[in-house]
Length: 485
Ligand SMILES: Nc1ncnc2c1ncn2[C@@H]1O[C@H](COP(=O)(O)OP(=O)(O)OP(=O)(O)O)[C@@H](O)[C@H]1O
Ligand SMILES: [Mg+2]
Image 1 (cartoon, rainbow, N blue to C red):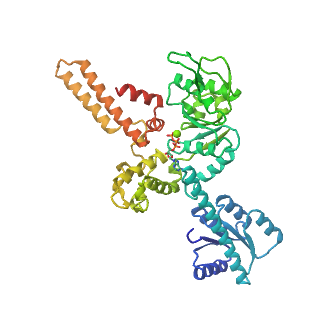
Image 2 (cartoon, helix red, strand yellow):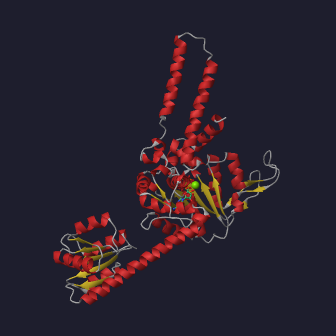
Image 3 (cartoon, rainbow, N blue to C red):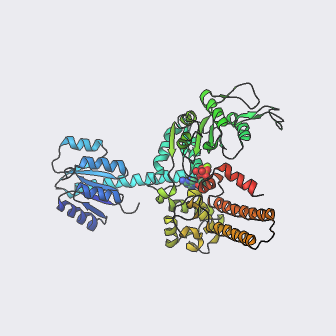
């Protein structure tokens, strides 16, 4: 922790002046002063404090309400209540609500005040140390990185709570936000940790393949099924099954999933004997399943089965405090063994670009950008020249434009139209078949280019690219396979 930040809230101007003199001049701690509840709330909303000295009586509010607000929004901050009319009742109430201690005004004994401040600041330091140790442990054990004040912290606390119980959890989040990371974290913190964690991507396989992957098949169930093969519901017995991109499951798979979740039993493809299974299901989606239910694309009863607890991971642009800690982690990860002693970092200009960009591909995109910058780096400092150019363009760069046509494509289409018009006008004998074949080749090439570019940006996540292009993963697969030929 750097120097602790202290806030003094008191309507008596002299009290503020006293602390400013005493703590800033004598002890060298930065102090902010608020003379009313309104001023205090403004300051508390704009930055975070480590210690607050709060007067019990204020003109526009009271110290107890402020204490409550501080503990709710900034639990790491210690609060000392100051009171001129000390009554045991309000002091006890304050302590119950989490105040560190209380002190009577005026401060007759400077020693007493000193001792109290030292104790409170020591407690703040211990909390910071504890939080940092926890963060280090998350990184070393689970590869999870976040800032001290990241909203991810509350999410992980919730994950730990739900981990111990066999309830279904739905993880929602844009592409690359860390849905799988969170699912593995839940599994690792659950009593099932010693059993398998198996993930299956419902959007990556055809319906038949997915069905046989999930439930297995009997010998001869279909052409090519030469032997019996157990499905994931069997293999993951006692463990955790991670159903990724659950929104892509077809209606027939949805019915089968619902049945196994309700009864704990399923049939192998081509089988007639029910098989019992005990798996904990975690599902992930980067589209809104509620919307899909409204559009009749997803079964409501299955949604309720899966969504006992819903964890929503905020996109990286909504937690900018995580960007630089994550970048630091990826730098470390990308340094070759012999170079771990180097102090590789981004220059202030590069940091500004990284912080302003809106990261449509989230943590995965950041990880790719850092890896690329490391490849381009010359010394220990990586400047803007190591970053892809589209980053500096900031918000609204290509992937965020959704389904719009990129300018180069518009240009090419216009060119083709011009050539066709010219041919018609000059009454040339044109071979329309050849013309349309050539046009198709060019359009396919352009579509491939756009898809490749988008895939690169999402770290080759098909689901992520499909989302950015505003098409379904199925369409994306079709375009890659069919049009790419
Ligand atoms: N908090 C984090 N700390 C460190 N690495 C992270 C964090 N969150 C995500 N990552 C990394 O970012 C990448 C993407 O994470 P993950 O695969 O879990 O995302 P996702 O939400 O499942 O994405 P998609 O929707 O595309 O499947 C992974 O390499 C993962 O290790
Ligand atoms: Mg994923």
